[in-house]
Length: 144
Length: 144
DNA sequence: ACCAAAATTGCAACAAAGTTGCAATAAATG
DNA sequence: CATTTATTGCAACTTTGTTGCAATTTTGGT
Image (tube, rainbow over all chains, first blue to last red; front, side, top):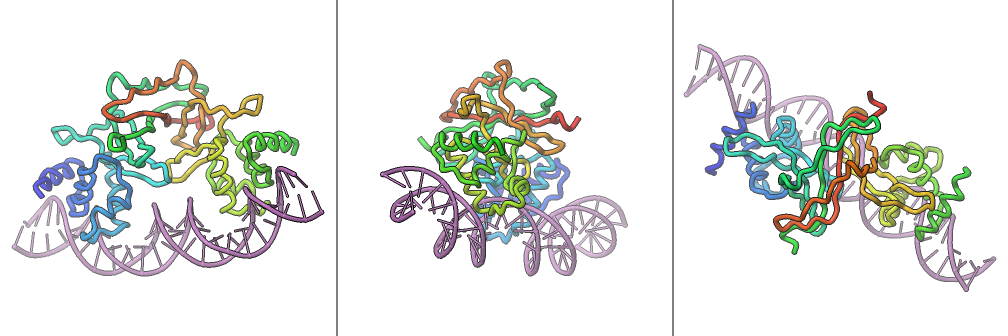
């Protein structure tokens, strides 16, 4: 796998030890255009005796290091997706929307174009707003 | 409980049979300013031998009839909240935001004021947007 | 290339959340 | 008030996620 060298460098940049589990999970997430569940990832790594607990912990580590974020799916479990990575292997954590296809249930992370970008809503009636998530529902390109 | 007559009428308006379980769950949801989990509701109804399965099914029925909606909490389970009801006992399903307090973890449904309301983002690159959910993170009035 | 320290992994057992099938019960209609 | 139909409670089960611990792997210094 030629990408391994790149992933290796990326993990070190994030202050993480390089392990085969992490390289594997990183590769699976990189290769998907949609957010994946724990089960999805486990399915895509059959053959490489990756334990479910290890996967939970790996995803958790990635989240704590800001590489991955999780989105709740419509059927009560978590989907995991990478933050976009730019040409310098730096993680870009800018605002983006989660698009949920009401047909295939897949969740895509869509960058918010400037012309679509949402103004952060004002704090109001004692609620102090610090961050926000925008979830879009509809039909994805694959489903029409 | 003086509200029972009102709830009774409301359920019939929704085309539902009136049962003690539904009256009970409706009352619990009405009395809360935040969205409640299945467990929360079960906790608030101790004494009334309400079965967990029945509660799941009741909440599901309410959702199918548009009385209740569910929001994923930050720790992977569903919270349930009523749609606002106006003076004519009609359900108001207008846009609203979900405010998640990062301190107490409670989730509030906040109406979107006109000045805060989000324009529906344009469909783009083959993604057809039909609905959206806005999730706000921050600190709620009780926590500061 | 090897060693020691520290982090990571796999396993087994467990806990929590949610579902299914079915028999018993309760609500609405005439 | 009897019949039909929906709702409820229970037991067993599935799925998802967690904990503790021993074994293994990674890293940095020699």
